Image 1 (cartoon, helix red, strand yellow):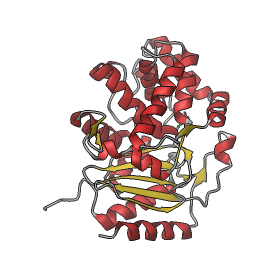
Image 2: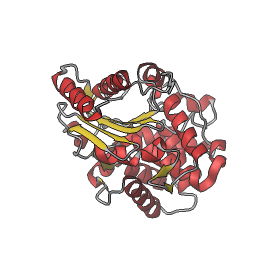
Image 3: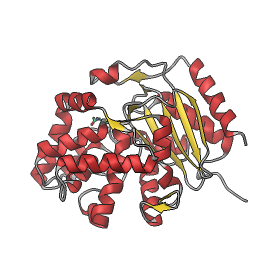
Image 4: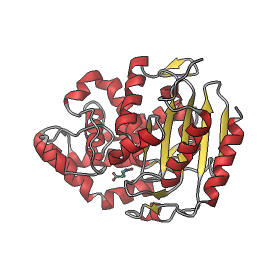
Length: 309
Ligand code: GLN
């Protein structure tokens, strides 16, 4: 199977698509991104990297950072995390507030905004915001073996200035005690995580630990069991109220962000990142999903595909 060719063919097909979705416009730095952009990177278990399109261009990973934050929080407090956040798909929008009242301030899962805010609060249980942001940056740089990854301060500032719904979520959870620390510090940290700027290549490299049972180049970052469980959460909750459809069409653990990126894992086979800024109605990359659908169709990488070898 010629993965380089497949990735190039997909990028070519995506360049011809006219229905590209709608670029996020709640902050100026995201609204300014051209909808024509498309990048894709596939890292195989043998270490080979296959890229096409704008795969080297950094973009705002936004909610994909929730995967890395969850990994750090599980590392810090283990299964105790699950006393404060659930593991069920939400069936509602990424920034929905309605479930929180009936479920007494405990978010459905760590991949919706409310859940990631709690995860951030957990990290701040033993770190100052500056330390937690530094830890996150070091973590993704190590995962990706790339010291050039950075946080876009302009994006972080814009998130802060417009993040009224996130403020409402955090304050509401503070009232229930699921968020315990200083709300402003928790949000400031969360916004910096969202503002991580990475290219498809860097993101696919950073996802290798989920492809390879928690290890990268022989070095262990999480246990095999935790890697498996993070993948399970990505499959069931990685695309908000679009998660069922993503599993149906693509059949791989994945996590999207409103910057138009998707990190996707074929366990034991590949770590994949796609980026196209136009979003569907659920806030997930329109062409990113289409590209992944083509990739699994051509490779048979869906976890639901029988592997008889
Ligand atoms: N920064 C965005 C927010 O908090 C992230 C959401 C997303 O990527 N879906 O609203």
